[in-house]
Length: 267
Image (tube, rainbow, N blue to C red; front, side, top):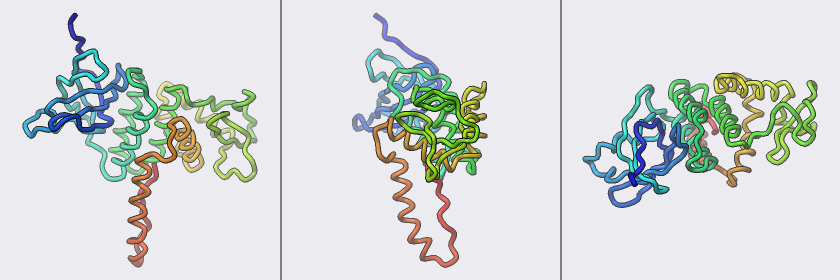
């Protein structure tokens, strides 16, 4: 029986690790096949044509063969379109990759989510001042795509419509719940309804981005709690890296009179 081969598939590298002295195992997110694993043989050799191409946060066209869980990479080309995010945006992009690694099962296609991810990476490279709304919009769409986002248009336990004058918080186990007076992160019913409506738009990423920009401060910790709950982790590795960097930056900044506080955003 002929070995199955896939050609010129849109993809992004999410993670890579050593397989031998000269080869790598790649975790890649593809448009029509979902997250898959590829072995890139000889890629660490200085003469490898794959060496300068297989970078994260870059739109690629990949070809591979094989029917095993780990397929064999046959060809890779950079698709262009935008430069790789740098600085703070690079850390934000790495955070998106970690989310996909933790929440996507292998061989489970999500073509719409792939398109949202590609747009998020492009915007991170081009709109450095909009990182937080970009991250929140992608988190919402990722959770929705894998069936982990509750309906934001009703109370989770009763399915009753939201009270226009009420405030609500997002619980990982029961969806939207009435907020207590001391819930500083609560969002108004109108904000949750606006998020739900944005997710149902023909272009949900841009619509969600606009809404997230107006409520990001309260939304961020609630989405983070939901992501931690479903990922089974207390702190994402990229966030821990950020915390470590901030712990190094703050003493230096405090020692410099008149220095501005660190502007590193939190994923």
